[in-house]
Amino acid sequence: MSKPFSHESAKIIERAFRANHDLTCPECEVALDRRAIPPRKDVSYVRDRLWLVCPACSSTVVLDRRDGR
Image (tube, rainbow, N blue to C red; front, top):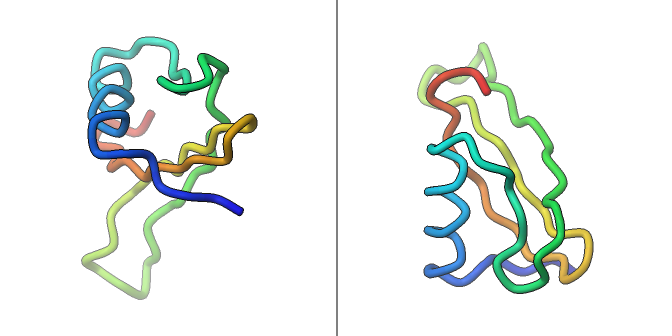
């Protein structure tokens, strides 16, 4: 079962993402799986997002993609 990353861990991941660094779990130190959540055309306020999941501890975080990465 997945659980959200702690606020501190989510901030670490977001800083790494914005700096274009490798994305690893701050707790397990393994590469995070990436799952795109594209915006829906029928809902104008939904943003382009990236769902990151740790394959080891199942922690998750969703980040807004501002530049299409």
